[in-house]
Image 1 (cartoon, rainbow, N blue to C red):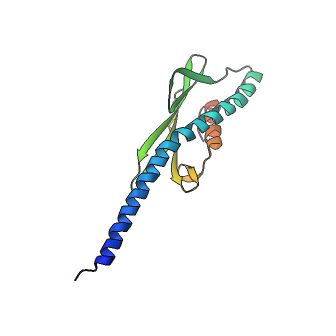
Image 2: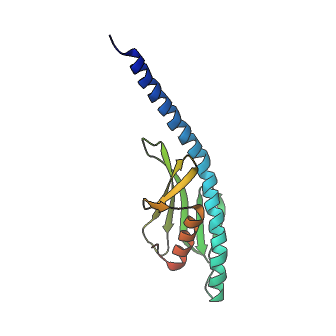
Image 3: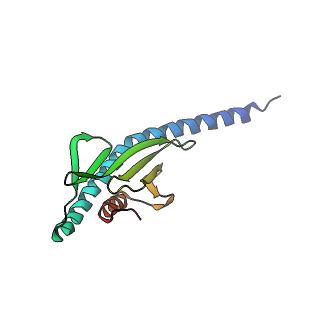
Length: 154
């Protein structure tokens, strides 16, 4: 005779895990645009601080290219030159469900992309850059803007 109680318990555990994974993915997909908007707001704040220092030294300021606005993507410019794109992407990352990735690419000068991989945990969205250390929206914005001013990411 089979141990149907044990088998039923295992089946229930698998079902519950699948439901939980689907719910986490749904929450992540809903939260990720909001988190990206927070990053974008912090980028605007960092840009205002950086532009104040750039203007003191007679350098061209950095601004947004908003036309047409694209959800989940920001392009930063200096004069008529595109400098940087910041994009939101959602990646499958099984067995955890999915991850959001904030990808930063300096266009001029051309340097390797930087990715901030963010995962959902019980306290909300947390970030990891290069798989080490936590990155908040403010820290991501500081990295983006200082990388643009410096011309490379550290």
